[in-house]
Image (cartoon, rainbow, N blue to C red):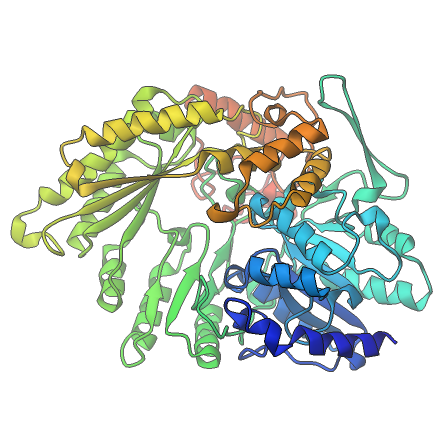
Amino acid sequence: MKIKRCLNMRKLALDDEILLKVEKPARYIGGEVNAVVKDPSKVSIRFAMCFPDVYEIGMSHLGIQILYDMLNRREDVYCERLYSPWTDLDALMREEGIPLFALESQDPVKDFDFIGITLQYEMCYTNVLQILDLAQIPIFSKDRAEDDPILIGGGPCAYNPEPLADFFDIFYIGEGEAVYDDLLDLYKACRENGWDRSAFLKQAANIPGLYVPMFYHVTYHEDGTIASFKAEEGVPERIEKQVIMNLSETCYPSDPVVPFIKVTQDRVVLEIQRGCIRGCRFCQAGMIYRPNRERKLEYLEEQAHKMLRSTGHEEITLSSLSSSDYSRLEELTNYLIDTFGGKEHINISLPSLRIDAFSLDVMRKVQDIRKSSLTFAPEAGTQRMRDVINKGLTEKEIFKGAMDAFKGGWNRVKLYFMLGLPGETEEDIEGIARLSNDIAALYYSLPKDERPGNGRVDVISSTSFFIPKPFTPFQWVPQNTSEQFIEKQHFLSGKMKEQLNRKSMKYNWHDVNVTHLEGILARGDRRLSKVIYTAYKKGCIYDAWTEHFKYDQWMEAFRESGVEPDFYTSRERSREEILPWDFIYAGVTKDFLWREYMRAKEGVTTPNCKEGCSGCGSRAYEGGVCFESKNQI
């Protein structure tokens, strides 16, 4: 009966009349180059790997590609892909009663064993509920039956899983290559032994890095703060992040799936390293992805050949949090340019470069292949503020990098800053305008015949609003109110217009309402599950998309749920407060984060990992030895 139902639904899912009614039907048909096809009847486990956003965004996510490749290497597993249907197909599926289906087989995902959802961004939380609802799977984990799939959440937002705790069966804390095999082997063993869903989840909770919310219980003080967070007997009290230390001996897709339509990252992606040595105090990724680990040069060269050959892409990008810190960057770049940049005309993209480490020689070589704007991220407008956030970047280095860029042939510069940083003053905000102006002035200081482009520079300055995130030194600080953010943005806009080079400057800013909600969800607790569910029932999906974001409905959901949103944003936390994510060990200790918070208040910088060990705790993954410095504790 189950097989027959799948076959019937497959015909319905691929109905031409349905596809002709939606925008970009290629989002839903599967069959792309390098997509994996298996016989479902010959595998033990069906796994749907999901990105809760539209196809073009999800297909650009490297983590999905890695896990898709890794799981499909197992003969007993068939891993397929799943993305959020766009709003047009969403409506049709509800009208026609079509259950959500996986791309490869077109089978309903409600008949799968697992659904793994990447939680990359807080504003995709309602899309998780959309996935479950369209799949005809109970939204709350407590309501699921024995035959329902096991729902697993992973990715950066899983480091504070509590706002979604009521919806997921398991959260995976760490890198996907580490313990998925253990989980799948356990599932097969439990099924062979006739164990029920609860028994399997109890066993899964004892696999390192796996958090099963149903076995953990929270109580609250009268003021709303957490009074206790306790694990049931038989499961660990602390969940420890899982890390792969040797990245050159782990799975990486040599044959990534090539989409039929243009997607956000339509190119070969080479992940050159993980982690970051810098220690910027606002950056969650820089903390949770520690320690810094590099892939071997020879491995990357071989992968570049394989991936370009298997995909036909005409661009290759080097992926990293801070590409400049890859120790063999110049060698790798020269190899790629010399090998692929000539007759093959392959473009080389170098994102995440620091201007204090930017190689003028590499810049010129890359420019010979493709000219584009150059992106710098000073983050703050004054040196005082950059020291507070531990950016590790001086004004002198910024100016030198900008001048090197102009001499290297660029005349379009993008600058990224944040408003609302802890301890920020009007002088710091005005510093953003002055720094933008001074960079434009540097260009015009060159002799006219040496100015690249048309003799005019474009300096595009963008500000996002600072959001305190878990596992950063600023996890205790209050977030600015929407009114404060708007006031600061207007102040800066005025200062931009006062600058001498204002005609060469452009100013962009972020949406304040999105920032407010993101800040709530980032540091929320389990009580937000009710709010998220209520917002979804009010029609909130695709909150990351401006045209679909419904801020008023979200605020109604808070009121109806009896939850005060500003409780999660506008107050400062004490050192003693139990934070919703305290039960997770993300590789950096709470003592280290607090110490960095105190240093930020004093405006004192901390050296990066190559300059000296700061004792963050991530060295534990090397058995007591810091991975970068190799200094014994």
